[in-house]
Length: 159
Image (cartoon, rainbow, N blue to C red):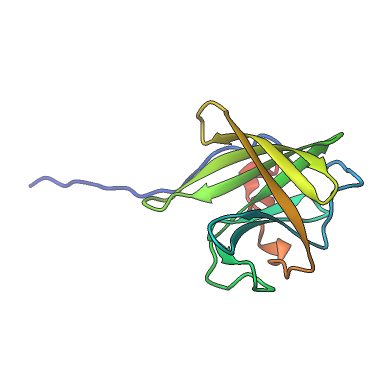
């Protein structure tokens, strides 16, 4: 008789910008009283929520731009951001659809008045890709609760 042991475990990419004594940096043009939205097809958007404590939340699900809050069924990826002068880097962790791995996505952009012009994106451990799109600020969009940012509570991210 032989046995086959199949193990299922969750793996997490290690953070690049977040650590125990993390400080997000500041920029006077960065706003926290709403979200930054990227227009998708039709009236759909993908919001990016930023919080003063450095947390970042990106809706992976396209949202109807006429809504004033993100539906409970929306899929989020949580992470953190770092600001240096007018540059912002958002590091978030996205759960694979067909697996249990959390892959790191880095997005780099330039902060402008009521917008972020994104110019670089790195998925998982691949080489950076040049991108060119803008997320515009939308005031008073209801935000997900930042205490759900699980990257702040994982022991391996707080060393």
